[in-house]
Length: 234
Image (tube, rainbow, N blue to C red; front, side, top):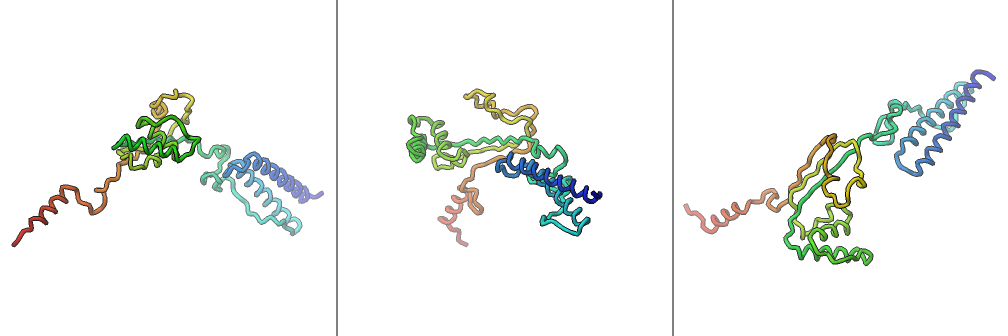
């Protein structure tokens, strides 16, 4: 057996081994999108196939049906968020944990109207959601959140007037573990740790009709009306 034949046999074995590794990674991912192990196994299989194809062409002037180009694993962008694959560090493409904390206050013009709205939302959710009567403002707001998608958009109802709010984005070392806090602890899960780093804060202000471009404040509108009622003559 010539050296060319030995090199070809070794290259073919690399293709077979890379194919098995790729298949194992695909099975382990079980349909998970953008799996890093699948991507790295794909790069290895691609390059093994390319190397075998090049050796086959050089030795016998023949090619395989695999139309592939070599991929540099040190420079190519991986499938996970465009993260560059560099050795073992690519195993964890997103090593940071981001915490988003939000607060928004509301004014309740009519408690009766808000409770009625919450009871209607519960009725619309179906009989399986039936429970005790909604009796307080807090219960009404919680009912609206549960009847919606859980986000603050579920509180965009006429019965609640939004006030100021704030959103804070922080980098944290440890992700939230709800089991570490008592069920009735409303402050602990939101309290920043000493190692948290605030990235930014977004202040939210309610939109008022007077915020429209070209709208005049009430006092200015009164002045205009008075001038119209008492026109000046030259």
